[in-house]
Image 1 (cartoon, helix red, strand yellow):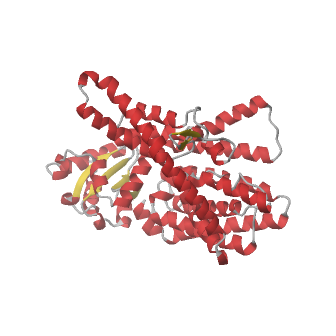
Image 2: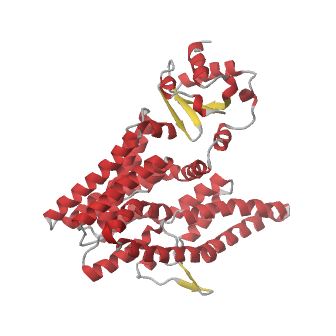
Image 3: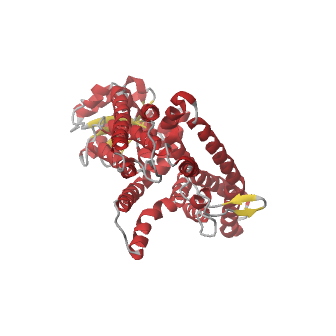
Length: 457
């Protein structure tokens, strides 16, 4: 064998043939699933001959050999594995890797499989949104036609986010992705009042059967649930609908039942959750000794994950109306900064240049106020990373309370949010300092846990 030394070292690091459940390769990496993951020494794995990098992710030990070389190494590895149980298995590497994950890891894996393919679109849109906000706050005026074009560039992906997610989720769960697209389009149909307008009291929801109904613009979990429902209902209907009627009846029932559940069952639940969140946040923010600020700074990004962060606008409007100041703006920025620091800290732990670059690309839109790519592309893959970001946000929340920092406006955060403080140099300096501290805390905590985080991601 041409790569006999490499294969021998691989088997030694992996605990021998009997410890290997499955294996495959992609364009650049050899992927291996083990029965016992604890036998692998990361330092030894990284020093294997011809190997350019090693990492463990979603139940798979991945060795980076590079294009072309990986095919040769795999061929010799497969030859050496001939006759073993792993070589004769009928299951896929993904199936075996998934079976080895704990429930939390499985949930993260499902979310990643659904949302990671959308990250390039969200990153691009996030950057465009940030640029638009920045230009507007700098006083640049646009003609109606140019503004309409810019709005098309910035709002389409997020306005139709449920469509993208429903498609991806339906495909992930084994349903018909086209039905997923149709249901996603129905969730944001123009006939339904826009969710943002309803929550901002500029539009009235439809009243049907005594239930308030409006669109799901920007929502994440309702679209994931829709994809799951489509896949389950489609399989169930197909199990008893006569084949001669399947082409018409199964899609009809799948779409109508799914959208009915989303609008009339899930809708009221979400509305109740939003009411609970609004009342709860008001209580939390008013908690004594800065406890509310600390909790908000730590937990605000959890609202982004669920899509309930849209409810914050109602509270911000109320605060500005009553007091002329809005402490939610700096608290939101601190929560973002903590997660941003944790994400970049994680990216710089990666020795594989491609993974590092992808993580940095996912994190960059955060500085313009868009954190979904960062959360789903980096931080939620490891509880240690996300918790480090939460702690960074909590520290920022405490400093915001101590300095009594609040913004005179709303709608922009992080770098564009600087423009809210240009009239008060003292507040501007405080905003910069607290943001930097939140970032550094999140970054530092990840670096301190570098070894453990590398093993998880």
